[in-house]
Amino acid sequence: MVLLTACILTASCSYTPLDPRNTNDLNDNENTDFSKRKTIFGDGGFNFLGDDSNNGGNALGVNSFLWRASLETISFMPINTADAFGGVILTDWYSPPESPSERFKLNVYILGRTLRADGVKVSVFRQLRDRTGTWADATVPNVTAPKVEDSILTKARMLRHQTLTSK
Image 1 (cartoon, rainbow, N blue to C red):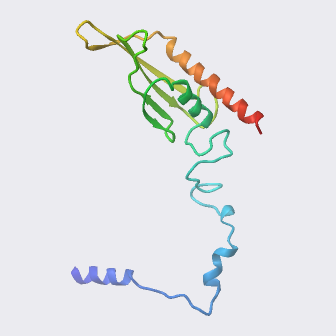
Image 2 (cartoon, rainbow, N blue to C red):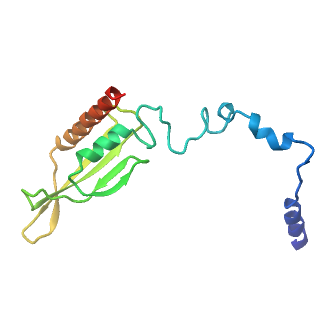
Image 3 (cartoon, rainbow, N blue to C red):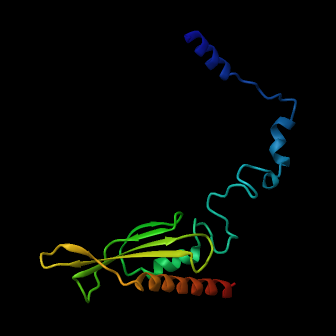
């Protein structure tokens, strides 16, 4: 068994030198148009940073207008996590100065690379502090998350309009 393994390892390490008289071995890549070549990644190949031509996608995994609008809309809250490729923004708890016994947390999900009305989803969490100083979950009015989503979408449309008019 040891002899068989040694033979396989030795055979896999074989070396075939290029023929120095054959210049085709060295220049094959010069005449190859790699952009027209079929690959497992489909037309255009694999672009690690995203496709710039895809409706404001730029180098993000999600729509750049929605991403920027989300960050600007919730900029008053401390951001815990922001993943531009996955389209997730998680805030830390925020207490408004006018009501220190109440705090909020947002989870913003950007759902795609296109600027659409259903392209962003917001989850809102609310807690109230009781007399003992502990925080307890509280209900959030049903209109809160859609209002934040609408604000993000409005800002994203404004950013897109500014970009288009500046060109």
